[in-house]
Image (cartoon, rainbow, N blue to C red):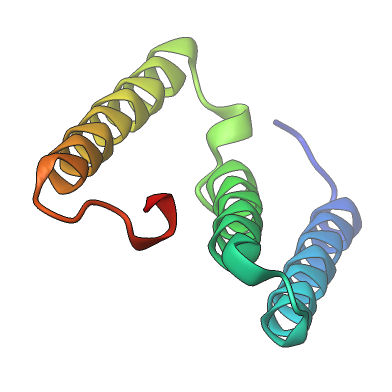
Length: 100
């Protein structure tokens, strides 16, 4: 991991610019008439931002395989819990309003 100072700065600058573009797209998507897809667009952009932060600012791209495996396990558990919450919500009286 012998990176020069200028390449590290360039990488962080590019990541910062990418995050700013994603921020602008989040704000822009809020004003578009997307209907029920507002949430889908916002979550997609948020996932892209989280991946950038995890890879570069948390140094996940230079981590060992074990660290990456633990991060994937955490994401798997999180998605399982979100799925259980969604199933619980859908089985209640009324369910989702746009499915009726």
